[in-house]
Amino acid sequence: MELGDGTKCVHGGHGDPRPGDPLAPGPVFAAPYHLGDPQGDFYGRTGNPSWRALEAAIGELDGGECVLLPSGMAAISAVLRAVLHHGDGLVVPSDGYYATRQFVREELAELSLEVREIPTTGPWPDDVFDGVRLVLLETPSNPGLDVCDVAELARRAHRAGALLAVDNTTATPLGQRPLELGADIALASDTKALTGHSDVLLGHVSTADGALAQRLRRARTLSGAIPGPFETWLAHRSLGTLDLRLARQASNAAALVEALREHPAVTGLRWPGLPDDPAHRLASTQMRRWGGVFRFELADADAVAEFVRRSALVVAATSFGGLHSTVDRRAQWGDPVAPGFVRFSAGCEDPADLVADVLAALS
Image (tube, rainbow, N blue to C red):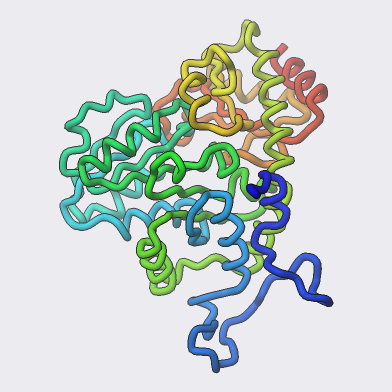
């Protein structure tokens, strides 16, 4: 029987309990282990039971084999270094997370990659895939919230001999399952909604390719880019409420979007869950639920600062998916957006309180 999202979140990765075991296992702190079993743990950089427990839980949600990394960028960089070779072609989103493009330009320069930056919505002509080794998508895109057809682009990438990876941070494994849509790799910054409490840096890569997962684990061991056991335990604990948190965040986003649709100070309002949003029709075919992140524009940077100053509940922060509602003026980080562009992450506050506060701050 296929278990529901909430059940998987609560029980995932906990294994078969024995009498006397704690209901919720704690973190395992170890550098060396007692030697003996050649297949067992022997050193903390190579393996940790806390990693494996969370990897089992996330892997079940993603529908693949999960490899845990210490941040979202560690997950992206691990995939790029594991897959790409000198002179390979790479497609990255021109409107996605800016640090991904920065990493490719600055840290992978020695590979002399042929990099093609394509907007999430395309156009995607056939020659985009020529000579490409990896296509990296981000859908919904960050911060624009545009959407592309994962299944169709996976088919075209595979026809050209390329792998397709999806940055699934905005959607989360509950909102979208890229591996089921044909992607070879799903990755995410679990710093955001998956852990959801704004206190942990973490990332992961999931794939149905066992050999690739093993390469990633070996790279993790050799590079030393490993997650801490305490952070891993915090993430696993937080995963238990992911289904509940996402439901409240999405309902808050829906209420806020509806309240802001006709507001005279707001332009460029976008949320894939909005029936008349340009991304809604396609998103409805591949997303399992909506998230709590939406976007809009105010007049300028000063208007955004004044909005934050007047709000009692919304704070300025450069992350999303947490319990607290936040805004991030993305132009300050170099994204090619208007100075008053805001990425709003709806938190878990009471919907009526949040809507009233936002409207008062904009009045």
